[in-house]
Image (cartoon, rainbow, N blue to C red; front, side, top):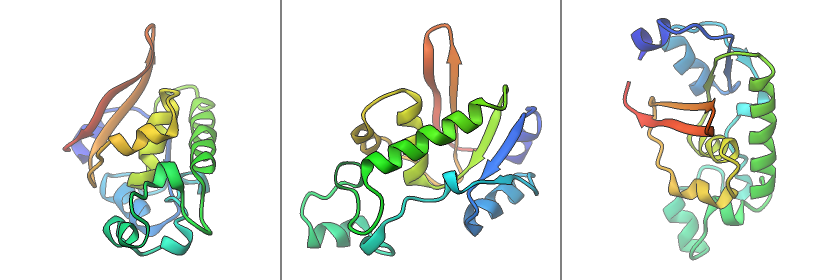
Length: 149
């Protein structure tokens, strides 16, 4: 991944303040990304630390982007934060690299394409993969998703 990213110029590199995102940025060759709370992982409230399977054992059919988490973020709040990050990234005037977390990055992709937040549940996102959102004459595109480094 490092070789692919080092060949591209970025106007800004952002990271969640959480250690795992900062560490990934460092491993990718970006030792001092701009930390922003906008990229932190979703607040799972009472479901923090639980797997989806365990949550569904308690609440059948639960979906993060449909139901949110008691005591945590609602789907609307997740979407609004994703839109706020898109505004921040757009303000740089160029390419942006973001290091964040799976559930939140799915929300960013969906917000980028201006889709309903519920669509985020249809995206798979593995760890340490590359995705590319871009704007061109056709509009906002999901140009690459979940690509191995």
